[in-house]
Length: 149
Picture 1: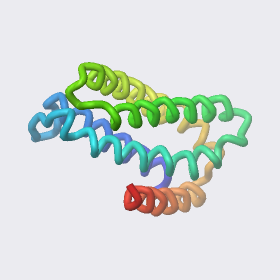
Picture 2 (picture 1 turned 45 degrees about the vertical axis):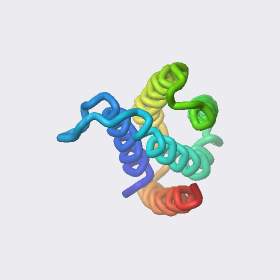
Picture 3 (picture 1 turned 90 degrees about the vertical axis):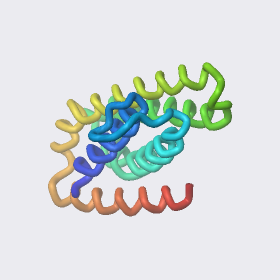
């Protein structure tokens, strides 16, 4: 898979995890947010670190994408801070569920924006061979990050 396919696959995985908490997984049952959160946390961390290291770093030098990439770094920072705060909170705290809802909104909007106009612009910069190579490196990087977590 190329880098674009890898990122979209990760996005789908996270969307599906969020859906599990609402009882809407494909053929599945609802899972409690407290039970599914560690998996969301792990997936998001691996994805964001790999994306920043390989995908964003490749694109941030491009004038047409620089502002978008800087915005994406900030959105990742917000998501990381929220995940960190949530890890420290009691799952029974009413603010925990509020944070989870906001996290979901931030992440889903970020994914939609990224897969839209940003991917279109990025495909003009990252050619097919480079996208394949970045996809392989992204997969390796993410595996390494997830093993360390």
